[in-house]
Image: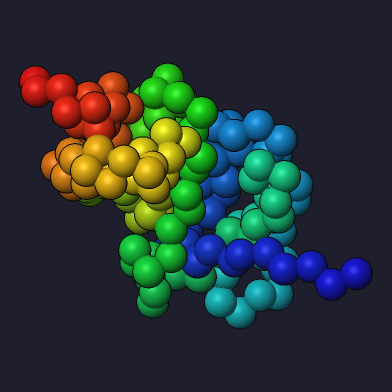
Length: 161
């Protein structure tokens, strides 16, 4: 059976990234670390070349390709969070150690990978039948870095802060 796995290009820290990511999500593990053989012309013997890992049940590959390419927001991973507690946990863990917050639930982790940390309530509120409430929720979200579910609900319901 043919499979597809995202391959993430890192600048020497693929194993560290895989260790972090697999520590955060259920059904995750580092499956295999491929190291450079002695006769590799471009990498020292024993250096990590690739890391195969499973993240939330899906296969990934981390490649230590060097500094030639870097991550952009053109590709991001969206985390479907059940509640504010999950939003806080994932946000804090991914931002730790040099990550950068953005807006509307987006961040870059310390490796430069973009993530969307999104509570399930967000699309529900933005697509709710009460279009005025949905507009207020959207306006509130546009002012946020990390998504705050309580503030979204207050905005949706028209509650002034």
